[in-house]
Image (cartoon, rainbow, N blue to C red):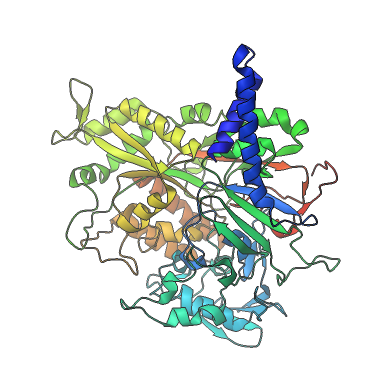
Length: 623
């Protein structure tokens, strides 16, 4: 990727500056040499591509962390391409549609749902995909307490957290029996490409790994299908299967010849033969590659950076691409406080007790929210192409509570921030530094993932905003894998800026918002397979949210659910365990040769209907 940067920077330097005179010949030669090297790198991708194969080239910012669907905690993942579930979510309407299941039937008392699988389903190794695979996936993997998967949280029912029972009731029928009505169940069965979707797994490949325990009593499944697994050993049911993976460089996917979908003419989908994911070091590198023609899409896994918009808009016709705009993105971006008061097995606190005393104060958190100038972030970082974000529920959801309907919001107000801090006993010294009631300088770390220039720019501005209160911020962009490990395993951090994918159904966020959730970032409890923790405390407002999620899942009346989730949103905005920042606008640049793209702001992946996409290299057709 350094070759890409150097070559493209050199070419741009020459094209935009006519004053460099005598050094031009040398630099032209250097640029040509570097571009030849770049072409050599590009040829690595083309080596196994035959002349009659169609190919789509995309980018990701870092290596994927696992090939095992239930253990995944990141987006994007290979499962967007390789796996599917019982149902799917329409990326334009949000409606739940059939996928591996062709239909379902819900009992009159709403406590039993029976799915009927499609006929003739197969795995990528040619073996039949049956009801036994569905039962295995849910009963033996997702609902297995020995397997640490966030997916389980979306199925916990009522205050007891009971799980459905899953049973085979016919050659093609599988039934979920519930202890009580559970409104989110159907949407909980949605699979990839929805982020966090539940993929059906091959029993004939993974059953032994689930039932066999290692010396510590953990299923071998936890170390199965990691990123060292040869791609040929992965058995999938999605439109593509992984062909090769070169860490730090690229992943190559090829058509799954056993994928179930065919079009109206009987032609098997997907239409595109190969998909290549190039691992790039930053969004700026991805922009360079897109402009040079090396990438076919920019902005498919997160919105196009607003600062790229005007540049790319001028190049649409010449570059034979177009920018698609889908409206406010469904995902959230927030700053999260570490409110965990627990200690590790040796009794060491996860959070410095001095800092913990600040973070635990509601007034302190609210002061931080008032100090962050989100309008300035929107103008400076997003070029005005976004709006403030205030809710943990996606704006597309019918359960979204707007500020006009009573959602608390925090407009930039330094005076109000200072008043709150004074009420909590904080004061500034003669040097303008903020001190806590015990005289400690208020200073803490803010971390986010490196390579994401939007978040890096936001973090720099937040640091500047808080400095106006006398707070010292140590802002550290770090590797995404390290960031996730801190949040989900070590628990040793102060504040982090991160994002979550959104959904129409608020209960899909149960793993984040319920105190027992595997992604309850701001106060993560004990998790399966991890070392025990001590002295974990759940606050009253967290328990209130637990009760609201249980009630919202139990309530079948839509108006009743709206009222329940409205109260949930009010609590989050009053307590502020997280501070929501900016609602990005979904934008994606797509080559004209890529057809049938159906882009909107709802799905987490802009190419959610990849099985329907086609490539036309013969013309420059607009969509």
